[in-house]
Length: 278
Image 1 (cartoon, rainbow, N blue to C red):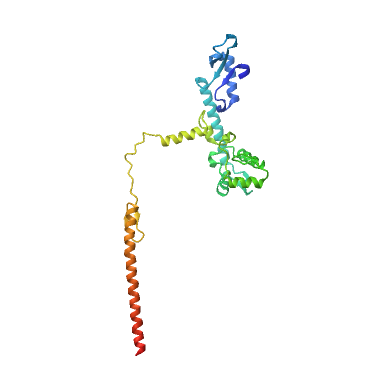
Image 2 (cartoon, rainbow, N blue to C red):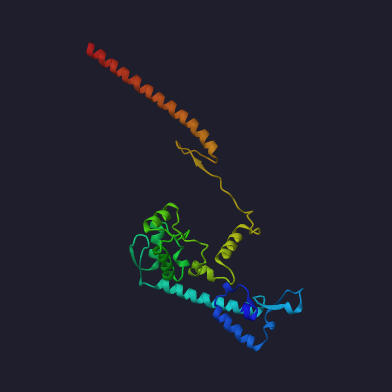
């Protein structure tokens, strides 16, 4: 389209269903001239007229294009959520763990939770994943080809790969690999946004919201309790001072008690000796 028809489609990777998008605009271009829908970009505008060319930019600045993209996005989201629900309800799931070959049947979440818990390999919460079988097939294929799932290097044998992933803490996937995007529901939620952009917006809402009024916040003082009695203080310095005094008193009391016990035993022993002497 670029070379033959001088047509450029903006953000083409973010179009939910490119074939349907193309089919729609093909019909519209048959009805009206391309210039009626596209921005015209003239190249070499300062050069000779014979060397100037017009390129056409089709983007969502045009309301009709924006509406089309939103409809395709909504349709794709509905399909993804329907697929996800089928996977949630599927009780015929059957698969072996990629790391220990333990067998799992029933719900897919059993396997995903097992890999996270037993092998420290998490690809996310089960409810955030769609096309789970295809996802696991992709990961298994990489391991079968002796490829690290994180750094994606190829190793000479399975043992070397296993040691590498364990020692380097590479039991995770590469978040920068766009191949995995289609397996996460978040990538279908908002038109024209990747999951990183959606996540960063959520974070900014938590950090940058200056309209929140915290004036009614009442902080409760920390209450520290003595180790030797029920005394409480609001700061650790105060409780440390109290415990030092308490510990001194307890030590002195213990020493007095010990001295009294020794003196009593000596007196008893002395009386017994006197009795034996008589």
